[in-house]
Image (cartoon, rainbow, N blue to C red):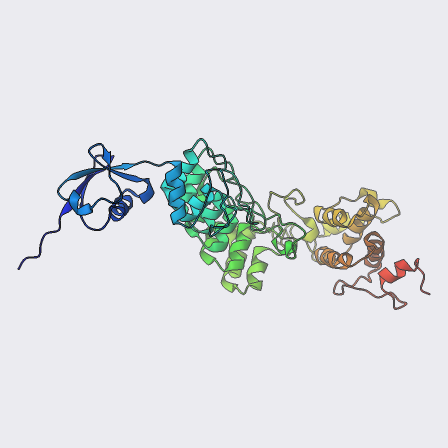
Length: 437
């Protein structure tokens, strides 16, 4: 016996396309099928028979063998209703999500991005009454809509945001994670990383994370590029894409903790990524000329742009030991340290940074730079100075003690607290007026 044929409803779309849908279930089920076909939200779909809008209580079977018209009508009430289906509760178009939402502190665009629904995103971007296109989340992350899309790997949403003229937050930084490129690289979202690298509107390709100093790990984060984020998270494919892309040039960028991406990969036990970075032509091309041809065996590491305290090349980080070229040694030997010779010294940005942080005056800063210039490994010495001064009651006075030790060759970079010959710490000696009672 042949199975009974299922009755169908003929649906005519706004584009003129006609489709047939089984006349079963409820009107909400019918609207859901139409929404999936039109790639929109069910809340945006209205069904009409003739000129009458169909009520929710109508029996779908009564529509069999008849034609209905599917009208997609985005509106603010429909948008808020659609977001409520995704557990986002908004009192109005320009209100933040309330405590009844699964994530509090988002605006309507942020919520639409999280749902991944392009039609809701497009409607929100084009809505004249919506004024939060470039707002950040108030949940403590500082994420923009582009950050949210990048963190979820929503490449179509990212492209939509990047192409929208109302969006001006393409290069914005979050509170701790940097730009959308950092976020995508950390999450391993290869398609989003490629979209950002290829987009001319995204110009923060080589910018670094600028972390607040109140964060415990700020030295680790401050100065990280997208390559650092990929290396730290073990995203080999992303790291390779960054290395191979012509727009990414900050391969040898250092963080405040004096770690490049290769070092960060090694610490994260990502050996393959570390080797890939080390052997990449970009890393080798930024090392300068070979030894014996005006170069040094140490890399000239670079700081990425986007940070007022950092410069393109940091000579302070280069080992100035016996491997330096004779011409360079001769140039250094011309500088004779006197009482006022610090005035002739060029202050490196990293030294100025520590001076600003601990309130060192111009004279002490110059003398510190002058002493570091005589050291074989000034980068390590400066890192130790951060640790020493962090615990000092009188940073300027203790700095002068350490400057003297550097010049005399008694500064021990491996120890955070050096003892004076009398068995007292430098801090205690300063408190006693320089006398050992």
